[in-house]
Length: 380
Ligand code: NAD
Ligand code: TYD
Image (cartoon, rainbow, N blue to C red; front, top):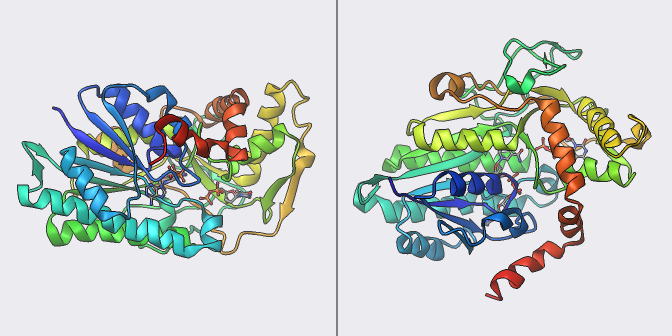
C-alpha cells in the first residue's frame, strides 16, 4: 500500500531515527519530515537521507494550523506520527509557557488540521485508513516509589536488561491504565496533549494511538540530556553535574528499539489503544554515570575509571521524579515487539558514536548547526 505520512519533530533525536527507519524500510511510502528547527532540530541528523525520492523535509511550526492543513491537503497525507515537542525537563522548569504552547497548542493544531482533512472522507484518504499516532512519555504517570533502594532481581527482563545488571528498585511499574500524575511542566504539558489526542478519538472518532516510552539514549541526542552531555564532558575532562545524590532511577531504552516499536505500533497497533514502551532496564543515575566514565576512558585509552573525580554532586532538580519503570508487557504480548540491544552494548555503541562524531557535537555546542538549513535550502 502507498502511504503519505508526516513525521513531526523528525529533525530531533528520536524523530530522526524514526524518519530514517521509515524512509529506508518503506520506499513505496512518501515520508514528510515536518520540523520547526528549534534549538533541538538539526538537519545534520538526516544528512544521509537527502536526495532520497520518498523523503521530503518541510520547515514548519505545528502551531501554524493553516500551513499544516495546506501541507496535508497538498500531499494527501493519511498518517501522522507526532514527535514534535519541547522535551527537556530543566528547560520546562525555567520556561513552562513554551512547553504549553508547543506540546499542548501545537498538538491541538495538528489534531484540528487532521480532523478537517480526514473527517469528510470518513477517516480515509482514498482507500487508505488514516491514523494519528501520538508519541508520549512515561513521565506523565509521575514518579514511582523506591521501595527497594538496593535493588532486587527484576521480575521481568528483556534483551535490554540481559547484561550484568537486572535490578528493579521497587515493586510497581507504570502500566497503561495508571492514573496520570505529572510533576514537571514538561510532563504536565505532555499529559495534556495525550488527553487531547484521546478526546479527539472519543468525541470525533479520529483513529488515534498513544504510546508512552521510557528514557531513550543513542546517537543524535541533544547534549543537554544526561548521556550525551556527560560523554562530552568526560571526553573534555569537564565536571559532571549529578543532581542530588545520583540515586534517581531511570529506565533506559536504545533509541532504535523505540523507533522499531513505533513502526510496529503504527502498522499493527489497535486504534484508541495506549501502549507502554520500555525494556525493564532500571538504573540509578550514579551507576549509569560510572558506566559512562569507564566506557569513555577505555575507548580513549585512559586507565578505566581515571575520570571518576569529575563527578560533582550539585543541587537537586526541583520536583525531581525519583523512579521511572515501564511495564511493556502489553506491547510484547500483543504486537510481539522486543528490544534488540542489551544496555551495556548500547552504551558502548553510543559512546563510540559520540567519540567518532566530534564534529557533530562541536556543531551543536557552538550553534553552527543552525546555519545548516540556510546552506542547504536557502532562506525562507
Ligand atoms: P528533541 O527535543 O530531540 O526533538 C524535538 C523536535 O521537535 C526538534 O527537532 C524540534 O525542532 C521539533 N519541534 C519543537 N517544537 C516544534 C514546533 N512547534 N513545530 C515543529 N517542530 C517542533 O526530542 P526527542 O527527545 O527526540 O523527543 C521526541 C518526542 O518523544 C517528544 O514528543 C518527547 O516527549 C517524546 N519522548 C522522548 C523521550 C526521550 O527520552 N527523549 C522518551 C519518551 C518520549
Ligand atoms: P534527562 O536526560 O534530563 O532526562 P529526564 O529528566 O527526562 O529523565 O535526565 C536523566 C536523569 O539524569 C534525571 O534523573 C536527571 C539526571 N541529570 C543529572 O543528574 N545531571 C544532569 O546534568 C542532567 C541533564 C540530568
